[in-house]
View 1 (cartoon, rainbow over the protein chains, first blue to last red):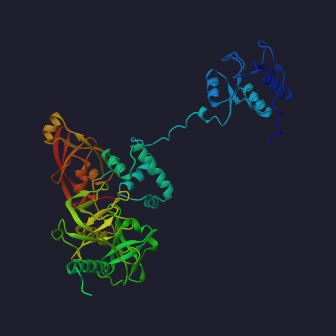
View 2 (cartoon, each protein chain N blue to C red):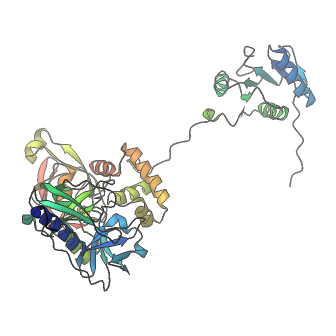
Length: 196
Length: 298
């Protein structure tokens, strides 16, 4: 078993803000963690902290130091990431989290608040194995639906719970673009999805 | 005290008498949250609505003041009809009205007995129209419309004329809580099927089709405007055995033109299982005819 890993030691951090309180607060947080803070732009730095609410962005993109954006909203975060920032945390961030985010950026990773769910890629739609866009299970449920069975009866026939059967039925209704089971049966039959 | 309106009293007495008489053919069926009504089909057989028989393992029937266990003979979800067997029930089978005995405008009573006591509602038979096919491909022989206001708890209720003959039974018909009055001839046909096979067997070709409009030379060759384009053939099914292929356009089955899915369902709904029927189709621009051995819908 590997021994304890030494806490990452950060190099120089550039603070990009025009708000003296933020600057003082950040400097305090960082120097408390043993990180040296570069005050003047132009000095070589390893990573930059950009307060999006008070300052224009520092140089961003290839060749520039990775930039962690301090934001007040998920929308700000999206805008900052779109401009090339490598991370986005709330302005109310605590020292340990800030330290962790900067450490991640310095090592070439991205760091974003987990609560910014809209920034995550949407899940890939489930792959269906049939040409019509229905999973094999949905085809089975559809066949039973076409016989007039209730969710409970469908569940019994397929040895799944009525709740799961209902989930599949709802997915089928949605894929067929209908609201009712009867409509689903008629639509599916006309599409040739139910064999007669 | 002499009655002031003897004709009205006689009429009222007659209605009460018919209600009581029909009530003797009814039982309460418990197999779900709320009990519903069942109609005696034979001394040990009860017809009821299938949706109320969900708790198959604990079905009970109340006959008079006796509570008896019941076994499911079979059910047809497509029509919402179930047949139960109740050993030693000694039921008094209902008298069923024939199609010629039901008359539009006749007084009718909807009699139910979901909790042991008889309930009734009065109305007229307001229309008798041709039958229809449910979306599940189940055939209803006639559309009976009764101007009886329906309330919850009417599933399985018997609709009787003033002779006490039962015209039909209320079910949900598989349509979301929509009450359908199934005519006696449909009930009788379904009960016979359930007794023989445990379910209502419907014809099956094992083919997925889409309705298509025929144009130009295809239309001329087929001599009809539309047909059913074969988009899937179930391996090993009747269509597979008959040699149907993707792209064939089905034109008619046993002389019934197939212009839409409903036409095929209707022909398969009755008297098709196990028979070899002539099937006309359009293949490669030419009309061909072959024979298909109709299977049973799974």
